[in-house]
Image 1 (tube, rainbow, N blue to C red):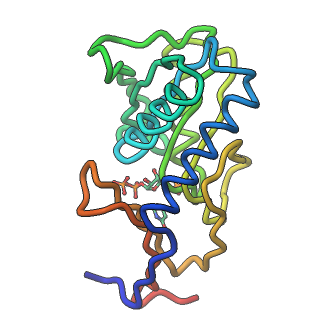
Image 2 (image 1 turned 90 degrees about the horizontal axis):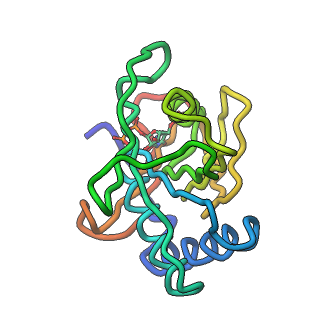
Length: 184
Ligand SMILES: O=P(O)(O)OC[C@H]1O[C@H](OP(=O)(O)OP(=O)(O)O)[C@H](O)[C@@H]1O
Ligand SMILES: O=c1cc[nH]c(=O)[nH]1
């Protein structure tokens, strides 16, 4: 592995509290979740969206549709469109005229989110798009600002953030690394 000097900056409890707060903030900003659809960007954004939907159900007693988007093939100039799938029901999700809340684990340059927004707009015209991220590490290269943030983490460009989630990793944790060979 390239990375050295690893530090944990968020543990399981910290992630749980941040997602609970984001669930409350989504409910407050949207005055409920009527007409809202949560869409997670592969891979970990999907699990974050699912967890927040579970919190919203607990708090408000209202189910909110959750979908996923895989933008691997859209990054930068690639234009191929892939379907948004409903990971709860296995079918396609309607995003036309919906308030779409996009989820990703880390926001860095903003290129992934831009690609996701391009793909969504190709698929149908959402009423609006909001953005939720677990970690905002700065260094934006595009004018993109999240509406909901688990934790703002000032970083140098030579550092790397890694989000671990129990759905696919050994535990829930956020790590920061100094990448060897990269200048601060
Ligand atoms: O704002 P950006 O500069 O686009 O960076 C953020 C993206 O980087 C990571 O994905 P990555 O492409 O590293 O793939 P991964 O999800 O498989 O780690 C992360 O999951 C975000 O989607
Ligand atoms: O530090 C970073 C930057 C982009 N994407 C990540 O997952 N981590």
